[in-house]
Amino acid sequence: MPSPKTVTVLAPAKLNLSLDVVGTLPNGYHDLDMVMQAITLHETLVLRRSRYLTVRMPGSFVPVNEKNTAVKAALAFFHYTGLLAGVDITIRKQVPVRAGMAGGSADAAGVLVGMNELYGARLSMSELCALGASIGADVPFALMGGTCRVQGIGDLLKPLPPCPDCWFVVAMPSVGISTPEAFQRYDRMGSPAHPDCAGQEQAVRDGDLAALCAAAGNALEFCSGATETPAIRSILDANGALTSLMTGSGAAVFGIFDDPDRARSAAEALRAEYQQVYLARPDRGGARVVPNAPRRTAKNA
Image (tube, rainbow, N blue to C red; front, side, top):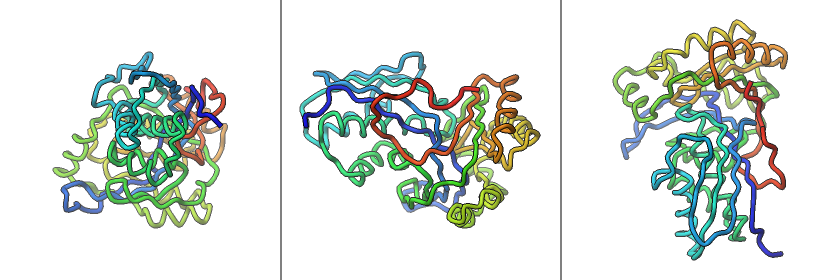
């Protein structure tokens, strides 16, 4: 069967159900322990065969240059496969920027998966993850998706059973967070919070949402510098969230709900203060080719 001339890819955002800093690696990077969850808020990518490499992000302020993760992914794919070709990529961004939700990593994962299909390269998941790791620490998870225990700098992934059924309400404050600056503040300030990632993994395996929420936490939240986090958490908690916390290095904040009506009420309450509010569910997959991607895969409540 000939390879297609156009492919559409959905690439999920992620949330950190827990994030701990457990040390420093010999290369100087922080040694992390996390439980990551893909959610039904996606980047949508359309890739077409072309003689040139072009990347467009309509409506987005993300620069399209050599530092853009989608550009890096395309170049890495061509370098690895040796293909003398090009690709035209259009990315409809839904994931907030500087949010700790791995939108850039999702873009890179979507490009790798899409180009693998577009050119019939038949690269394995291991090969794609190795390419992804050369682009960014969260790209391997963006490729695998689902629920994973993630360690090291994000390169050690242990797939877990699906997250217990729940609803996520995510709010992006008015100001984003720089990941390097967040870790620099952590080095100066430390954190009083160190979540039980092993306990959370066991809660996922047991299908115990209450235990999962009890073990949640983010060691970067205390030093993030995100001033709006307490206000968002207060609204989520007041509307019945089982737990609320910042994701990644920030600045997005989310709550976990066991009742859809409470989740919708929380989203509506947040709308009064914040422009980017999303209602999402756990996603069991990572970046994948789809026949006809829906225009909206999560509610921008």
